[in-house]
Amino acid sequence: MRRILPEPEIRQKPDTSLFIVNIVLLLILFFLATGRFLNTPNQAVDLSKTSELPVESLPKPLLVVRDDGLELDGVPVPTQDLAKALEGATRLHVLIARDRPATELVALLSREEFADLELRLVTVRTAGEGQAP
Image 1 (tube, rainbow, N blue to C red):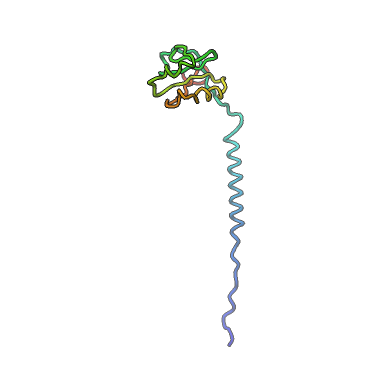
Image 2 (cartoon, rainbow, N blue to C red):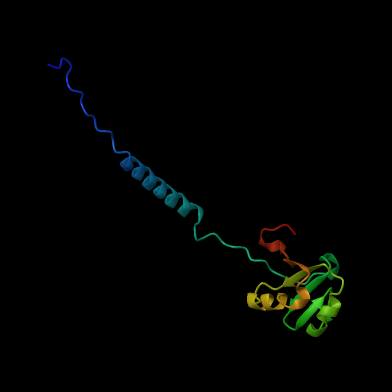
């Protein structure tokens, strides 16, 4: 028996993996280019500065960490009497100078006197650095 219709052509389907690879590479280049513009190294980080303020204007109870010791609401407190001074408190605000080592703050706040307290770090903004007074 003779065929009247020609044999069907076998068409090859395009390989889509090449298209997907191209799109992924373009996306990677796009995110690298835009990320470089957004994260420029010349962006400055504004660090907080502490200064002498009247204790009345700051939140209570406030623990100020100084070079010469601790102050709780403006009253010097020896470290051994800190647990007694914090009796009944549920929240404690802590103010420390920005140039003090972080390990000192972590060592202080890891003491058992602070275990049941909600701790909040207090920062003071100065008016000369683009911040409102």
